[in-house]
Image (cartoon, rainbow over all chains, first blue to last red; front, side, top):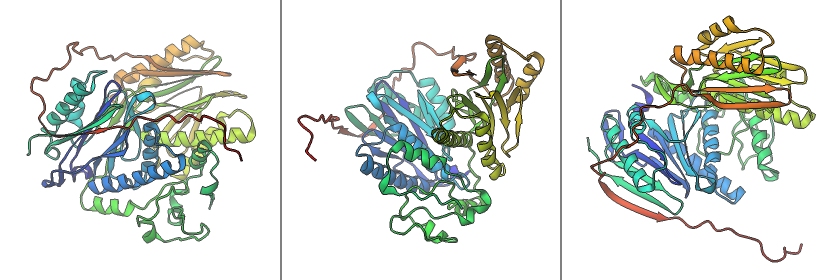
Length: 204
Length: 328
């Protein structure tokens, strides 16, 4: 069994028109046993940048704490928030530092950059950035997510339509993966508000 | 041991700060036992702790280390692998990368597919990396390694240019890359095609993950290298014009795209001549998505939402200075 299949996860982020959506499942398991159905995978770095980490849950939490620490240091020094592109480079550097003994998680970063232009990116566990203009996926359900997103994604969707698309893609993909699911957690971020929604999904 | 002290209080400019960090020499694998601790605010930097793994693994102050790799998670990862969990697979660029020297300079070409095992992770990634205004480098192998190694050498070249006041030479980039790759004995899995035009003329080199290099008039690397090399061997001649060169490179990459499963999507080309470079991103797109339905997807059943929380974002306030500046 792969190390990423120890806890199970599904994460997806999509770009819309001046907004982005980032979604994850909510299951935390130890191989085939579910131990929590409200695990927080998506974390806010600041109002305009979110990071979702899939993979080994302990590394998800440790890496999140390290990244929040580095961002707070940055805020103290620069007196402003980090741009999402800069944050992605920071995560990539932190992951590559551990090239020969990596953190066993794959981040998905989403944010609103200059001029409210949405930015998404994902990385493998050693920090190889993959910038995409449409959607990025990560986790044990990633293969189904690739397929669902390819079919359902349209460019320039508004916030409500984007929410519907990303939720449908997430729920249909986790239904085909034993290790992820048990609901969904979706954040849709526009320049004026952050909408966080908990989805009802199959609890099996 | 190269102890580069950084005084955090006197950081002058964020650009130099990051360039400086990125350009530090990375420690060779066999010296990892002696690598210094991450810098701590509360201790003088001169104290050296050789076997202090206990301290290193504490949460403590995780300020950026003095460059180089850190090995503190290796023990835990080995333990997990022994318990039967498979190690993760990294993003590879299966790839076809090529370079050729033509009459006035160098042309580099690459495909744009990034794979994670058998799955295509990125359909349009960039494999031609910037090293200097007159030098570009294509990378095959583990994506994180090619990106990190080319970024690091690019920063080192920039600092070197500031120091010498001259344009970078291709041979400088070559030596920096091969020294780094050799010291990691092939574990940094980056196979590169480096090309550029400097004061001494056009140059094209290939660099293998173990650190060996070749200087060639035309070169191919990656899983699609045999497909591309067959095109080059049949059609290459010296003194090609720019258009002939671009056509030949595009043909070689296409042969890799269509015949090799690890390469695909589009063709990127970079033409470097004396004093001028042209990066033709997605020069050819032989694999467009033609099957997309214009209607799009419509969902009849809406998703059920259990809870919604709306956080309004504060408007970004622009502070403009009005009035006179404060007197000193």
